[in-house]
Image (tube, rainbow, N blue to C red):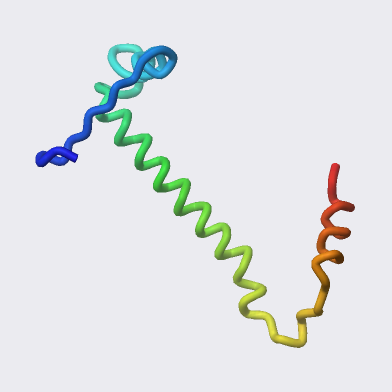
Length: 86
């Protein structure tokens, strides 16, 4: 990365066309830098939301008493998951 903390990215083809639609008079962003910063923020938010979702899913298991668990084999898990296929 450059000393001024800037990066330079080349885009072409469909990426360039999409970028041009997002900026300027017809777009939501004034310039490419603003759009890229918004994409990075959205990526960080999505990642944080995914971690929060995973934590919520795991929390009941982490809080459960040992007696609530039952031993199953890998084959049991495979059989159970095969039955869930659409």
